[in-house]
Length: 175
Image 1: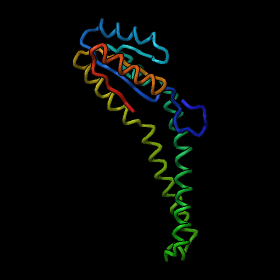
Image 2: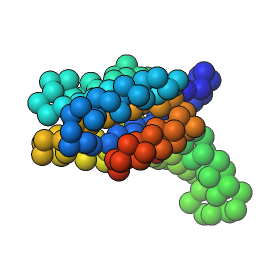
Image 3: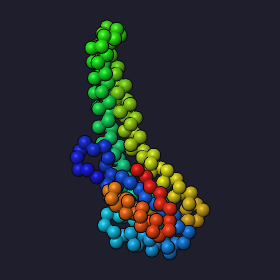
Image 4: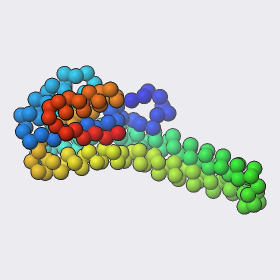
């Protein structure tokens, strides 16, 4: 995670990597091997595990920070972009904007802020994580055992993917 206050993310690990194994001891062995790798936080989820949600998304406070930061960044940016568009429309001579430049700027700033908030919400929801989480939950329901890794950067995510492939699994990854 970047330490800049302007980054929209509040989580330490932005990527989720997982693989499903039929054999619980193989899942435990793979997770144990991955724990020795720096920057790879791995855990095993077995069917019936009561802490599935926490193991899949351990950074609940980070998700809240992402929500606050992303909205704080994208809503004002969208509003500013709306004002710029209004100024361009006035400069281009569009009759409605020329007739009422203040209301054009106000309307487009509000719309820009609204759409900035929607983008921020999408970043907070992390639909890329949802795909991996849904597949892991489906595998657990069928009796599989999941190894879940939260890599700290892109290099570690690639290392996790390679380690899972070497173990004979088909890894799943968010972006």
